[in-house]
Image (cartoon, rainbow, N blue to C red; front, side):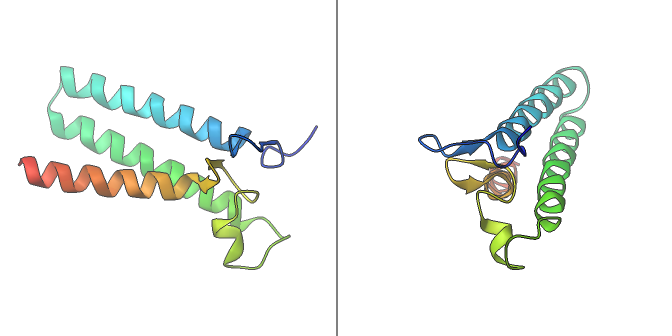
Length: 108
């Protein structure tokens, strides 16, 4: 069986690990929305923030275990961890978390 990061759809720029991480994010997003509807909004936001932080930590941990690349290159390489459209998943989530933080401050 091939490694999860080695199975990359070249035309789409995604690998299996990246898609699994995106599915985990969608589950966390729906969980946060559901919690926001039945409890206070802050609990849903905290749940979503913890889910995003856990996925980022998992992807960075996965990348830190790789030995093929240099120490900095493996953090950004699409072949060392989860990637989507040739961008590491943790960068997508970091951008999304920053955007959500700015929007929540703006709307408060």
